[in-house]
Length: 85
View (cartoon, rainbow, N blue to C red):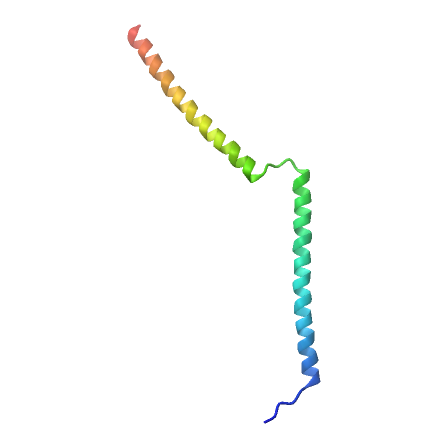
């Protein structure tokens, strides 16, 4: 059975393909617009970058460890003083 071309179906297929392409383009534009708006909002706020946060977090961890060492040393020295006195 030979295939016949149906111009109505061809036009509908072309229309659907164009609509899908247009929908993808609109989605990309919406994502770009949203990203731009969020970046603009964040730039006006006083927020830190992930790198800055991690650097300060690491400093806090090291300071806490040093504080714990000094507290233990102080307790040891106080115990020695109490033992002498």
